[in-house]
Structure formats: C-alpha cells, structure tokens
Length: 172
Ligand code: THU
Image (cartoon, rainbow, N blue to C red):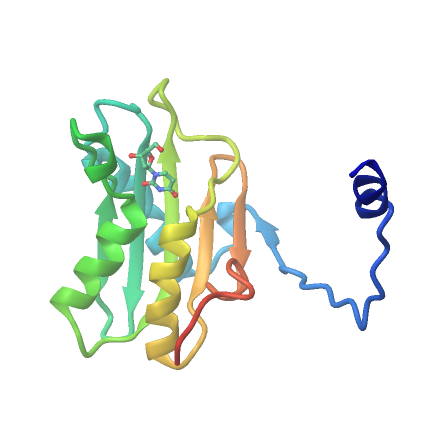
C-alpha cells in the first residue's frame, strides 16, 4: 500500500500535448469607452439601485444591449430561501430573451455596489452559472457578445462570453 501511494505521488504521466487558453482583458477608464459602451455602463450602474439584496447587501446590476436598439437591465433578486435568489446577469438575460426572443445580444455590462453602498473599485466577474447562461445567448446570436465588467476606477472589456468560459459544456 505504501509503495502504491509513493508511486502515485511521483507519477509523471507522459503528456501528448499542452495547450494554454488566454483571456484578453482590456482595462479602460469610463472616458475611453465609446458612446454605446458608456450608455450600457450607466444603465448597469443604475440597475444596481433596483437590486433586492437584503441578505448579502451586495447590489449587482446588469444591462444588455440588443441588436434592435433596446437596452434591458436586471438586478440580483434574493430570497429568504437563499438558493432561490438569482444573479443580476441571469435576471437580465432571461428577461431580455423573454421580452425580445428574436433579438440578438450585442453587449453586456455588469456593475456592483458593496455592503457600504458604494460602487466597488475593481470589477466583479459573473459566476459560473451566469457565464453558462450568457454563453447560450452568444451561441444563438452567432457572434461575440462584448462584456464590460464595471468598477469605479476601471472597466474591464472582454471580447466575448466564451472568453470568460473556455471549454464550456455544449451539446450542439
Ligand atoms: N451576484 C450577482 O448578481 N452577480 C454576480 O456576478 C455575482 C453575485 C449576486 C448574488 C447574490 O445576490 C449577491 O450578489 C451576493 O453574492
């Protein structure tokens, strides 16, 4: 038994190939964004005010630009049965697609205010479940959805949802 464990620890498998997946992240100030980006960032920031988060007191807002020109927002909605709550990103993307099923997503911005009520300095990034949900809309759009992660002092711009969720599960 001892020998087996030793062998497992020192086991050096032969590796056929190693690949690395890089996520490009541009870091910008609000002033460096174009008009559409500034507008969606403002919408996401405003949406944090409509968060219902009495348990975490962490207010998240998301805003999605659609190719029909509409901007749909969502905010996290919590529940006394904690797991029943839902993140801002899924509120926004499920509502957007329920409201305009024919429209394609173009861009999403995500903003948050911390327990002190102030906008967070550095951006947050969507949870795994939200990445998976958003990826579905990127897939059906047939093009990348730009992602803006909003902090007070800096904004992260990513080219797509799939850059946030490499090696995602997909059955199609
Ligand atoms: N939350 C979001 O709405 N989006 C995120 O990207 C991360 C977390 C919410 C869930 C919960 O209501 C609160 O923030 C604290 O986790």
